[in-house]
Every structure is written in structure tokens, then in C-alpha cells.
Length: 402
Ligand code: PLP
Image (cartoon, rainbow, N blue to C red; front, side, top):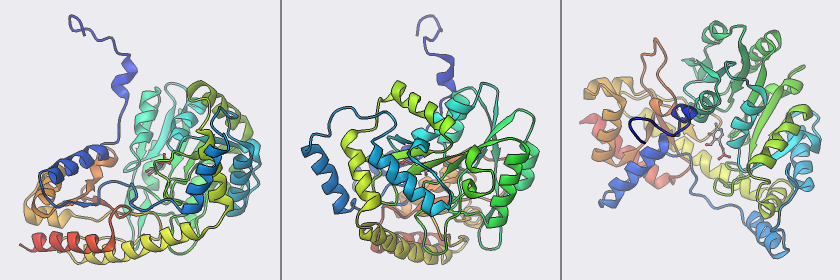
């Protein structure tokens, strides 16, 4: 910076971040001072990647799969992904519909780069994964949030907000069923209504399916499998959650060939290819023994059951029991009022310092929307074992009762 001028590009001022990482840093600092911390804040996992997947990666390195590989991914992985998603979605994809990515997250920016011009409006969930808003605004789009309303057993999409937000400039819709941070899932009627909106307004859809397989009962359903939707939907696929592979960075964009071709050219421009040997681990994950993924899901379900029960036991807190994701989004309005905290950060810091329980709040998932009166926390149980859930939430309860 010289004489008040900045050399940074203007767009940098519009780049957001994941503020949950700041909560993580605060929790780590608190722990370093010798305090006990119960980590409910970050959606990372404390579970190991299944051994058969690890072995496949080691073998691929030993076999010399260490050079560049095709930009859209190795053919066996693209074929395995096409087969897997075709079967689970009841649609028909081939390898030409798949561009392998270093994680699920890059699909968000590449979808927008391929389909959004500056000034185009994009509907996205808020609360929601913060990277949607960051990337829309960074790339010059107009971010139009839609929220959720509390239903009887789950959060419901706020269709009034969605319809009110649609204008002639609306081009894209981001939909995250099995939703972070609420854990909400749309009933069939909601998905059908969304698909109808997309067809009527000629919207292309990013279907963020990061938690598609993290589910404890029932089945996941994709907007891509509704009539005429496959041709206007890009699926964000990731290995991160199902196979406890968050740090491996492996995912894919799956969608119409005329879009995926450009996503693959973005791969050429940005990272050349996803790490070659990691892709062989992905092939093993999809086509090999599935007992590791099953075990992960069993552990998560036990944690969910305990966490939901104990959160609902805390005076002033109430929480749905989502059948998918590893997130809970308890309503903490009464607790905040009773304890006399006005802001989310005051509550969060007091809880951390007085109980060791570290969690995110609604504000880590977007700005509050007009008319929002209830106050929510987000508790992830992907990185904390049952015994610690019990101990931590027990302390939170005792604190709430004081
Ligand atoms: N989409 C949602 C809703 C997420 O919660 C996450 C990660 O937490 C991602 C995408 C990104 O996944 P990945 O870690 O595979 O990049």
C-alpha cells in the first residue's frame, strides 16, 4: 500500500471465507492454555479412512502413478463415478459427464465460472455453506439468499423467499439437500416444486450432494433425477464425508457434457489434474469393500442419537433429529435470553470459556436475513466421540441450569 492506494484487485474485497476456521483457531488457543475443549465446531472427521482405500493409494504410488494424468480424471474413476451416481440417482451418466476435482468445494467456483456472467443473480441457501456466497460475489454475480422456516420435524425451504427473489436476471440456483448447517432434507414435494421453478425460469442448478450418503434411514433424492432436470443440473460429488477422506481432496463435477467439458478446461487452467494416485484410491472407495463406509455411518448415527437427546435435555434449547448429515442446528433462542446474551459471539465465547464446548453459530453460515428472530447454533458431531459428547453436553446443561 502506498499513499492510501491498494495494489489488490477490487474483487479481492468481495472474497469471503469460512469463518468456522476462526472458531477452530479460538478453540485451539483455549485448549493450549490447558483447558478441556469439546469440538463441535468443525465439520472435519476424527475417523480414519478405511484401510482398503489407504492401501490402494499406497499401491498407486508404488506403481508409479505419480505423473500428470488426464485433466478430467483417470478413466476408471470417471467410469466408476458415472456408474455409482447413475445407479443411486436413477439417471444415466457416462464418463463424459464427469470431471474429477480436488475435493467437492472446487465444483462451486467452476460451476459459477462456467455458467454465471457478472451481474447474473444466483439463488443460494442462507444459512448455508459460506463458500457459495463468497464465490458468487467474488466472481461478480449477485447473491440472492433464501432461508428456511421451522417445520414440525425439520426445517422447510422458504418458498416465499425463493419466489420473491427470482427476477429476469436470475440464472442459477444452488440447492444443498442434506443441508449444512441445518441437517435439513427436502420432502419430495419441495424438490418437485424447486424443479418446476428451475424449468419455468430456465435456471441451471448446482446440486450440492456432499452429504448424499451420510444418512441414517430413508433414501436421498436428487433434483437431477426429476424430469428434464439432468440437462440443467451439475452435481457436486465428494469422497470427503462418506469415506472419511476430507484431507485427501477428491470429488467431482457431474452433469451435462456441454458444461463438464468446460469444467475440465478449467481444470487444465487451474490445477492440471487432481492428484494422480489419489484417484486410484477413489476407484477402490467406489468399487471395493464398502464395510468401512458402513462402519463410519454406524459411528455417526450413535453420535447423532446421543447428541440430539442431550441437546434437547438442555433448558432453552430444542433440536430436530435429522436423518442425514452430521450436523445439528439447535434453536438456542430461549437459552440466550435466559442467560442474558444479546449477540451470538457473546454466547459462544461464554460457553467455550465456562464449559469447554466449542460450536459455530448461525452467523458462520451467512448474514442474518430480514425478519429472522430465532437464534441457532450449529453442532457438528463428526469429530467428537460419544463419551466426549456426553461429557461436553452434560457441562453445557449444568451451565444452562445455573
Ligand atoms: N458442500 C458442503 C455443503 C459442505 O459442507 C462441504 C464441506 O464441508 C463441501 C461442499 C466441500 O466438501 P469438500 O471437503 O469435499 O471440498
